[in-house]
Amino acid sequence: MNKPTDHREQVLATMSTWVASIADHINNPIAGISTAVAMLEREMAEYRASGSFHQDLVDDSLSRIRYRLHTLGDYVAELTEVSRPVQMMPLSVHVADAFNLSATLRREGAGISIECLIATNAQVVTADPTRLKATLKALVLNSLEAADGIGKPAPRLRLTARREPLEVPPGVILMVEDNGPGFNAQDLSRVTEPFFTTKEASSGLGLATAKRFTEAHGGRLNLGTSIDLGGAAVSLFLPDRKKRPAHHAKVSRA
Image 1 (cartoon, rainbow, N blue to C red):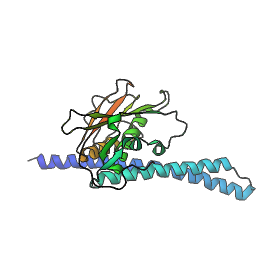
Image 2 (cartoon, rainbow, N blue to C red):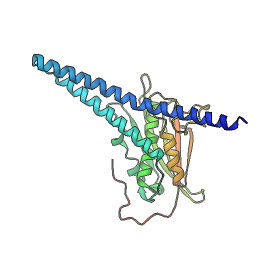
Image 3 (cartoon, rainbow, N blue to C red):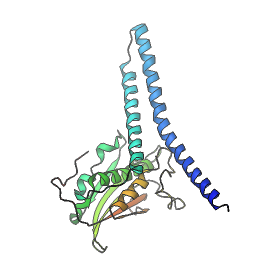
Image 4 (cartoon, helix red, strand yellow):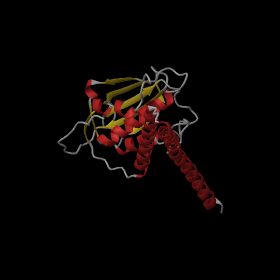
């Protein structure tokens, strides 16, 4: 008798958690933009009253606004991808291009070290270029969020690609490793759930999006520990599959 009620309460509780997470990740950039706008308004008022103008303050405020808008835009894009049906357009994608994520990080002076190791027989994969790039971006940003922080060593990431011929069908394994704290064993079964996160600044969508896109490729996502770097290791297996005819096979650089 209580099962329908219990299920509805569970659904409502999940929705409440999702709504609260969405509200936080939208309100935080808005608050930062509001603060920067208030600083600009005060500066303009002082300029009108005294004729003095502080260029550094204006530049800093505008930089803060741009960063917050980028943050908000990225988050809305993540939300859109979560709700949008996945339509795959498999092409031949050069792994080196897919690993070229430096322009998407928007980190300045963070001392980030990113190493890319691509086996000679794993230089090309069959995948949807846009979805693959979004998946790798989500994994890299997730690693940076975990590895970055005050008092921690400079973030180190390693991106590798190797062929796995023993799978049926065979394919390529792409892996992202970091020197962060790694996955908590208690949370390991939940980290790919939408909006689940243990990091204050994380959207909780990165690993969920990566898993969804990987499975849409007919592949699988595995979570573990990096032997060399000591942090998290996330690998995605992409099976060889028939690709669509295409006149442009390489991924455009960011």
